[in-house]
Length: 370
Image (cartoon, rainbow, N blue to C red; front, side, top):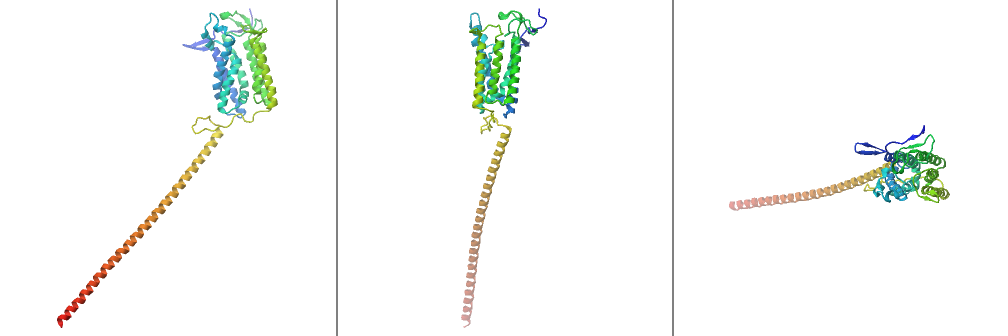
């Protein structure tokens, strides 16, 4: 009997009423949150806007989960499609089985879609989130502890993992806790990438490539300790070959990229103003302020132009009214003069008539006297 060992949980799931709370799922979720949090801090430090990492993760994480599950199901198809197996179990992600190679590959496709929608270069985004991915893996590996899976050979070391389950061919005993080895290795990878990035100003995807190379180096020897069933090629497990090939590709990328594109990107995220429909991504705070001030100045200019037009129109209308009033006054004056002349004419005619009447009366009186 071992005096010191790491105990395994008796159950990998707890029930809150009818709701199952699975340890494996919790580890994955916590890992995603930690990875996004660290990635956001690094992205802002490089000149990006807060929230961009999370927005792109909305695309990357679902793609990564699908890719990780697909890789596992394809490489371990006999667990789901052989005789006596139920193919529906291939969809039960909470029972374990996510291949990191498929998760990174298809997750990169999702990240590319998210970056393209925001006008961001994928290598710059990958550099920012690389240590966060390593920490997410470190936390996610503890999900294997809850499921009592992916352990190594039998051992008597003080930190041996005590397996108590006998389900799916497990043999109770004490084994190397390979999940713990990989978790600690991933923490070291995250610290290595952050140090190298700060020391050498890695850019254009080289920080992410360093993460890939460092992870593969550890995965190769840890994978070789595992005793679970796996496909072998030339005496080596499939994942060992995958780790070696990806390691070579990552190192090659670092060398070629450093030669062709030395240094680091000066701008990682362009300023994208809001469009008229409001459907574009939100711009930064400064860009918003500038856009609003420009809009306000345009509004002020348009209002000034409108007020000037209104004033000119008022002046013109007043000029027209004054001209009309002058015309009316002139008409009234001419009409008054005409009436006055008519009145004078009438008065003259009356006087002339009176004179004639007087002369006629005098003549008649003179005739009578004679």
